[in-house]
Length: 234
Ligand code: CTP
Ligand code: MG
Image 1 (tube, helix red, strand yellow):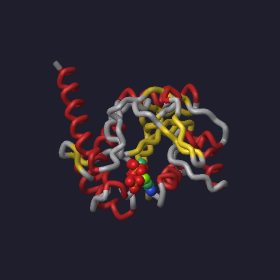
Image 2 (image 1 turned 90 degrees about the vertical axis):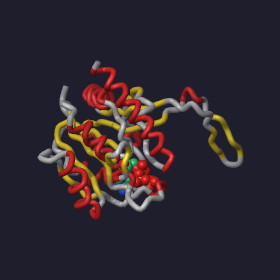
Image 3 (image 1 turned 180 degrees about the vertical axis):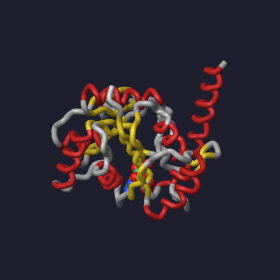
Image 4 (image 1 turned 45 degrees about the vertical axis):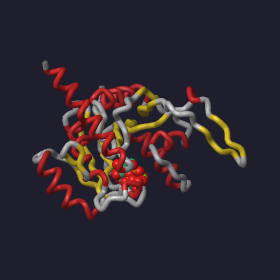
């Protein structure tokens, strides 16, 4: 299996968190949220070069309080983010050297090793992969003035990581950008050029930290992960 380069997105400004500091630098379990995803990809043998996308104003802060503190000596390329997630991904994508690239939101600190390995494995087979989970809630949508219910078994909640053959994702992004399309994940970029993505089941611990409530949920998930790891060691 070919290794994959990895883009960690950490250039968002967390408007929905309403905090004075961007959420990726806030703490869960006394460590910054960004620490967890970085640590996972650094320690995964299927991940090669790492590109960390940051807002320019946070570069020095991140070097001092995360990279030098937890990952001293680990090689990673810092990329300046854009105004949108889409722009941030593209800024990094243009620099990626490897044949495969895995994209992950730093706002999802609890991605598992299995999820990373599956992303790379399925991208090697199908050129594009993404994890998903199923909704438990009833999902309605509005068409004109009426409200309809979606068949829940046909609804997917899309997560990251997502992994792609680099040249394919670049082609899709070039198409999206030149047609002024707006996307919120990479599988949608592939949709726009009629290429399919292989979707595999992710897990519910891989939440996206978005609002303040998610910090409490994150603390609970982290405790559970630590408890599980302790049991595995016995
Ligand atoms: N992201 C990024 N560059 C941007 C916007 C988002 O790198 N210009 C990253 C975020 O840091 C995050 C991931 O993309 O890890 C998913 O975005 P989201 O959860 O929406 O984070 P924010 O955009 O920061 O939050 P909000 O939408 O509430 O402002
Ligand atoms: Mg956002």
